[in-house]
Each structure stands twice: as C-alpha cells, then as structure tokens.
Image 1 (cartoon, rainbow over the protein chains, first blue to last red):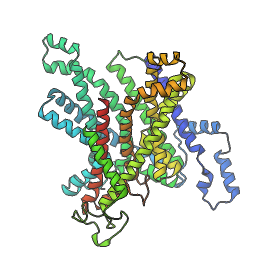
Image 2: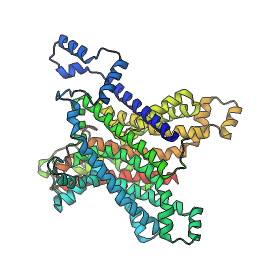
Image 3: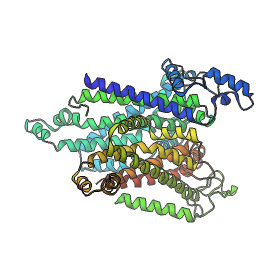
Image 4: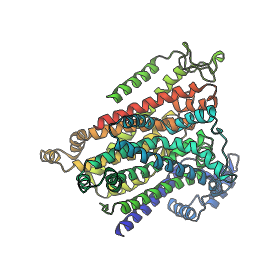
Length: 313
Length: 254
C-alpha cells in the first residue's frame, strides 16, 4: 500500500511537472497567439481586444492554472488555423494511433517471447546463431525504412495490401485492422529484435543461478524449470524494457504513419508544427506525455505484482 | 571489433564525401532521370537525374555532422548537470531530478519535434533541438556514476590532499567514469543518427539544398516501384552507420 501511495504521488508530481514544462515552453516563444489567430492584417485594437478575451495579459501562473483546469475538463483550446476545438480535431485520430501502438505491442510480445526462449534453449546452436545475427541487423533498421521495404515487397511486388489504401475504423473495423498490420510490424521490428536479445541474455543469466540447480536436483525437467522458475525471474528486465519501448513506439508510430499514409495523431502534429498551430501541438504533446507517464506508472505497479520483493529505495 | 571496423569504414565514406563526390550532388540531368544502377552511376539517379551516390555521400556527411553536434551538446551539458547534482546532492538535485524525470517521459524525437516547432527547422536547429533532447539521459547516467564514486577511497584521499571540489569532480572522478560514459556516447550517436533521419524524413529536419539520408528516403517513396534503388541505397547506408555505432557501443561495454 505504501508502495502504491508513493508511486501515485510520484506519478502526479511528474504529470504536473510535464504539463507545466510544456505550458512554459509554449508560453515563452516569440509570437503572439492573438496576432496568429487574426492574421497580420488585423488592427491593433482588435488584437488587443482578443488578447483581453483570451486572458493573455494575465500573469503566467494564472494562465497555467486556467489552462490546466480546462485541460482536465477536456477543453484543449481552439486551433489557430482551423478555428475549431482541438478536442474535435484529435478526438477521432487518437484511436488510430492507439490501435497502431497496441497492435505493435502485441506483435512484439507474441513474436519475441517465443523467439527469445527458443534462442536461450538452443544456445550455441545453428538457429540461435542465425537469430542473434539477424537481431543485430534488424535492430539497426529504423522503423520508417522497414516500412518502406514492407511497402515495396508486400504492397508493390506481392500485392498483399494496397499502399495508401487506408480504411477508416468507422467504415470497416476489420479492414482497418488489416491495413494497420504492416505499419505496426514496421514499428515493432526493431523492438522485437531488442526484446528477443534481452530475453535470451536474461534467461541465460538466470539459468546459471543456484535456484535453478536446486530445481533440477529436485527432479524437475528442463521445461518445468524453464517455465515455472526461470522465466518468472527472467521476464522482469524484459518488462522494464517493454515499458520503455512503448514510449518509443508512440513516437515511432508518428513517423510510420507518414510512410503508410495513415491519418493519425502524427499527421496533425506535423501539419500543426509547420502551421505553427500551437494549441494543437501543445495538446498532442501533453496527451502523448500523459500516455507515456501512465504506462510507466502501470509498469511500476505490475512489477510489484510480479515480484513482491521490489521496494522503493 | 566488427563495430570499430564498420564505423571506421563509414567514417572514411563520410570523409570522402566531404572532399570528393563523383558528380555534383545538386547537378540535375534530365536524360538520366530515375536511371538504374550502371557503371557511370553506381547507385542510379533520382527523379531530377541527380547522382544518388554523390547525394548519399553528402547526405551521410550531414547526418553525421548533426549526430556529432547533438551528442556534443548532450554530453557536455549532461556531464555538467550530472556532475554538479550528483556530487553536491541536496535540494537542487531533488528539483533537477523531477524535471529530468519529466523530460525523460518524452521520447527524444518527440522532444526534438517540440523544439523544432519552437525554433523552426534547418540543420543547426535540428542539432540544438536534438542536443537538448539528449541532455536528460546523459545527465542521469553521469549523476548516478558521480553518486557511486563520490565517497570512494581515491576521492577521499584526493580531498585529504587538499584538492578542491571542482578538481575532484573533473580531474579525479570524470576520467574514472569514462568507460561507462563512452558506451553511452556510442548509443547516443546511434540514437542521434536515427532521430535525425526520422526528422528529416518527416520534412522538419534538415532542409534542402542540404542532402540528408532521411529526406532522400521520403522523396524516394514516390518512385518506390519504378526506382527501388533510390530508397534502398540511402537506407542501407543509414543502417550500416547505425549498426557500426551499436556494435561499437556493445564492444565498449565488454
């Protein structure tokens, strides 16, 4: 319970710190939001009136509290370029990016766990060597390049999917998922390699420990020792890594969305950055950061479930 | 070992690109538009008829330049921040670690995007943006190493001998953590190359006329079917660069 309370306090402190940093970053940049909204042709009187209306002349702390309160209520402000609420703009894009991330996470777990265990069991064998070398190479391939290669091979040569033929989840859920398969594979590939490698090393390190010998001497077979004893311990560093990998995957999906022409959060983020549409950029950044911090918080709680020995230093 | 060789080869490749390219990387020639691999153009030509090998040579130079700049900013600031907070501890350390944790919650490329949206794009802004984005991870490593070392015997004896705090920090402790640090610097290079390529691919990193591997890849995507080499060659060079750094970092760890 104390563990939970401490973690929760840390979680909330980090959330506040992140939101304040993001707010600060966008508050101190040169350029006036009122001018940005009205365009350069606006009269000084109108700009001044809008500044009053938007509360831009108030002190920074007041503006932060107001902004944070609005944010909690789900009001992310109004886009400078489209003059519609930001919530509306990112509302139906968020599920796309989330699905992409979840799908790649599932791919990582489903592929790298069996692969890592196989490698560790056949350590030193032919298959192990092949996978270790392949891992090293795949790890160095950036997601967007494997995306391009997947498009070339499976889209243009084998015609397994139509490049750019994205189907909205509102139209057809299954075809939406089908189209997201290759993008999520592109995001997952380097992480699959890293997870496999980590799991292999971790299992091999565990099997050298005393408790494994004890387990064997009590008459357990290799499989029983591996699945009932070793894996439990070997998975702990893998869990840490997967928590961190999720962070990267959210970022990776922003890039890979471009490769496969998927209208997710990445697309709006990029157009908003080039349009200098700060409320949208700010909202997306804060959303992603919150997502990441929440994931890390959940991973911390999961630790405690998997390994009750873990305590706060 | 493999990593050192590969990195060496890639550095040589980049170095050659600084002084000599087979063609002018900007020169356009409509007669060889999207030409395939040939003796005169070993990697073919792009949609403007520019020689891809020349552009890859120039582009990997840009990528490496950005990586060097980024890692320099990241390590320099990271060492300073990590050294002071780790060595002295206290309230400043506490506040700093909170901020660091908060920044750590952002993937570095996302942090880079934030700074780019504030600073504007271009080669030097990418270096600044990614450099700042890399500070937290270096600071964290240096800080924990300083905490580990600050009460060791050699530090105590240096203190007894009358060495000042600054001298202890940078003359005594710093050289002792270089092994740990050098491995993370190599990972830093690895990540910086990937981040730069990613940002340039998105069109918010290095801007034309500067050639960049990421940008080439995004331009090549339109011609993926008619000229696959246009995408594959820059991609492979990028992979080799990253591979070299990652192998080197693992070698240093051992």
